[in-house]
Image (cartoon, rainbow, N blue to C red; front, side, top):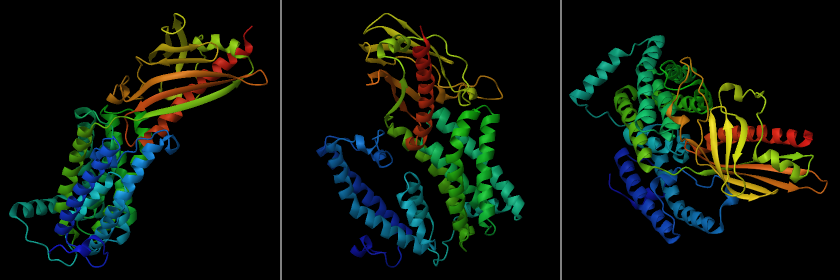
Length: 463
């Protein structure tokens, strides 16, 4: 079908998959180059992965005025492309016989890439299926023979086929690429839930509840396998569970919608092939992008009934803390044990000893008794993973959560007490960062409280 100018703004009618794919790719190329030109004008690079990441971890209040101008220019340039993308997606959904509310996936980071590919594959609902090649026909028939027709048999076979593939994708991301990113924590559970539901409904449409159950069970079985085969420990799996469960259920829901289409069985092979090849491709794409990790800041403060002069000696070094009572630290997450210092003033080296080793912290500012600021040149593993195999060292224990610097700020209050504020600046290489830094902020805040409460106790009760 020939291109018409109304294709760029009208939501009426339908659009075929070939035309949708061609317009989408061309418009993305044009938009990306416009954004690169805007970035050049503001002296800021704009790689394509920046459509997934927002580099203001301290919040929008910390964004400088010039960067606000940069973002405003990007938004202004994006508006016509957003409109065109939405109307084209609405027409493609209408052509494919899918519900129009699925246009919301156009705005979901990372998943919108797969959504675009999916709409490029699914043919029009009213269009007769094209003749398949002999190879594709044989694969389709083989898949139909492998998957039982019964509800229980199709569920079991969908899990038997997808769980090993998901484990292989995890090993590819973690061991081969060394990435704990969008592909692993967003793409994999979504694709796993989606494909499990599609396989489950290969012969006939299944109910929504059963599709969601199969999708969730697929993630549970993959998690159990990663634990049994010593790929991951319990702590990481528990932290990833809320995100993984939600995305697998979402994928199962989308799979349920797709498998309800009358022509689904004839299109199944194309969608399975798309899923199997798209996820590793996205993982490679993310790995090649090498997006820098954002720097986060965590602040915690306590009020101490003692003047700063009395607090300072307990701040630069302190004796061994009592065993932790917090449930968090009994899971294996590293916790502070004591602090030592060699030297005095700028250039001295502080050692904050944790349960897994010592942080090496050269002093950068020694403003007694007001401010102690230090860098971090070495740090121990962030946790000791819980595993039935004893000591387990998955890659994420090293260099994925990195402390960069820290400080203690003492403020003399009018009533003679002291507000002691501890701050840590750190990098988190887990993506999506918006999810994972909630965990890391909480853990660092609990570490702060353990140290600050100990300093408070020593300062208030020392001679």
